[in-house]
Amino acid sequence: MIKFYFFFIIFFLLNSGTIFAKKITVFFRPDIKLYQIWARNIKTEFQDSVILIPVSAKDDNSLSIADSDFIVSFGDRAAQQIGNSPNKKAIFLVSDPRFCEKADYCLTLFPDLNITLSQVRRIFPKFPIKLVVTQRTKDWVEIYKKSLHSNLEIQKLDVGEIREDLRKIFKSKSVIVLLPDPVFLQEKILREIVRLSFITKCPVVGFSKKMVNYGILMSINYKYEDFLPFIMKIIKANFNKTKIDITFPYYVVVNKRVLDFFNIKIPKSNNIIYVD
Image (cartoon, rainbow, N blue to C red; front, side, top):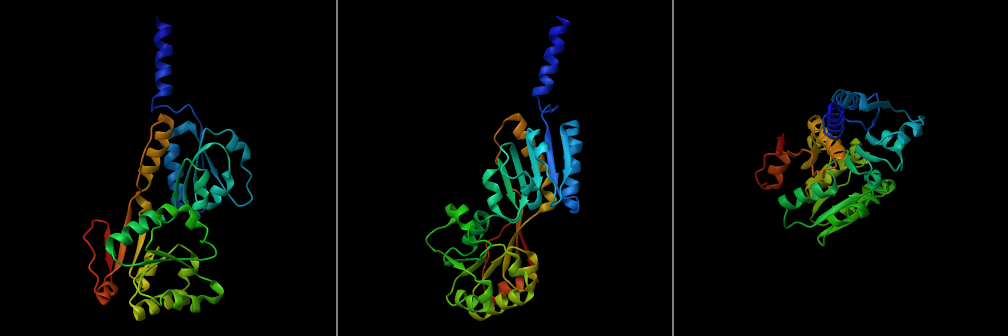
């Protein structure tokens, strides 16, 4: 009878959320402080079940991947390391959404197009929308095709002819949505976007608070500092074999001066931050 109770207790502990017999491998870049903090917290929470693996461009972690029940990765470099492994995995903060195609759960570095377009349509319900893509981001549109609808036009920007292409994009009245690409953060290009926005009175939606401070109307941003509890829930849900639907916290940054210049009224919301 004693043996029966002993084995029952062990079975209960191994199958409850309190002890994780399975192995979690966390890949992260050690030079990014936020990733370090998240990795250490996962280790503290799940203790001996976790192996932390700092990654560099030359690492080969195939053995660690093969021995994992669940993989967590932070950033593009870590996502590249785990590649197309068949393991269950959660990939966080990748700049390219194509990394998400082979993941059980994925979070891109910037709010995805579904979130961005939902906010644009809420604020500008009657405006046509132009989605501006580059050579780097043009293939992402296929991933987000469910978000696209009839009053959205896709415009490709050729970096070699960027000034001419921008003038064409701003030619007709619409909301200009920039799909994330570092090229839009270059000062000379950002200056031209802001200049054309004011001349044509076409509102611009970006992906960085820096862009809003520089003079575009608004951007959609994640609150990275609030992510850790959500990441923990995703890991626990995987081992408890429960479905979980999580929306990571984001906010809308609006340039108040640009808003007043365009004479636009924005519906009230708790996740809007105004800057001058």
